[in-house]
Image 1 (cartoon, rainbow, N blue to C red):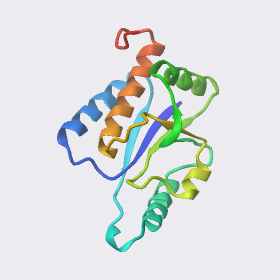
Image 2 (image 1 turned 180 degrees about the horizontal axis):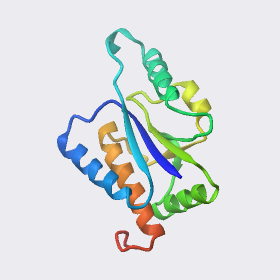
Image 3 (image 1 turned 30 degrees about the vertical axis):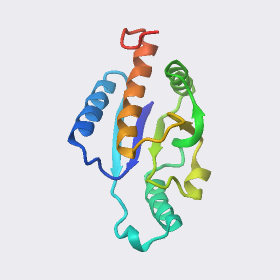
Image 4 (image 1 turned 90 degrees about the horizontal axis):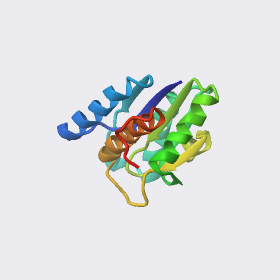
Length: 157
């Protein structure tokens, strides 16, 4: 199985980028992982929130194949513990999936078309975080999940 993370917009913070890249590199020891940054929509001040979500949604959907399993990182998604998330990933790997794609949307969330295409939704917290920080938190949780599955000492119970 391959895991991909699709995100809208680049990260302005060099420190957050460096930390995210560090965890992404570490993930490579466990599973093929990639992160794709979709460029921000230009001239958003002339677009309504719905128009912006729709434009971002079209860019997201262009990068997804019909055979991919898509999980949105969404405030209304299911909240899992780190151990629960590792079990979720193990089930996906056991099912024979080829590609698991997680998506972090833009500042206003996802278009209805993206919600309809998704196979599930996960929430990392009931709190709201910047889209730049969520990348780091999520990639760290992916790494943590694989260390849990391998019984490595990174995650302390």
